[in-house]
Image (cartoon, rainbow, N blue to C red):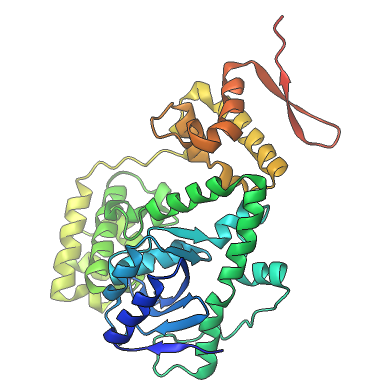
Length: 382
């Protein structure tokens, strides 16, 4: 496979100049995040026309890609969510006009298919599995590694063409465009550090001061991890965090004998920060966030159950991944009559929202036919 290795800013600018004259480009990334808090971009694969480039972000400034990403040229991805996060961190922006082949396939009856599955289905070609343990940050990359990376964008144009044709035939092009725009608009990157403690498996079993300490020390761990660009569990293990929360050490001696705490945590800087977090957390009154069932009023919960069941049936009828049709939060927003409820506008209002309004109004009910499928029936008015 022919490709261009891009390792200087002038060559990157030349590639971007060419792509900006094209109607679309295919893109993929390789990255690692096992040893860092933030994903580390290791390679960017680009294809336009019949050309392919492998951009080395260790040699060029990845912010140079922003000129391409801010343009209206269509970027063809497969499973773009993580790529968008990685690109936003490395180049500060990500493509704003995208087509995600995995999302598109979901609207044609496939459930989050892999790239290999789609290429096999549409092109009858088996992709090489390659070395899943490749260190993409190592230089130089081997020829086999470069060919494997280039292969990730080699078939995206053909998939785009075939998926688009089927979507157009079914009148679902706008559905995919909306879903891809939702993905572009979705926040990425670090969340609220004060909620980091909820990642602990035992979080909901903590009570009183232990809960406040877990929140405070968990927040400290998360923010320390961000500053040092290390995974949170490398800053402090879950065992140590939970042990501190359960014990609530009152002094350094008690901290030192807490399970999971190591010598590093007893260094002057760490120890001072941890004890400050413990003292602060022990004074907090922390309420657990509600369960999913708490996000709608009690009277609406039976309706939510019925609506969820009917959406599953609609997804089956239309051969659409149910999560693309509507998520649980979409149904909850619809029931709350939120101004941004997706089921009340656009194509979802037609495909889903009209039926949900009838269910909510009590004018229709659900029944099961002989094949085990749900159907809407007129409610008994007597």
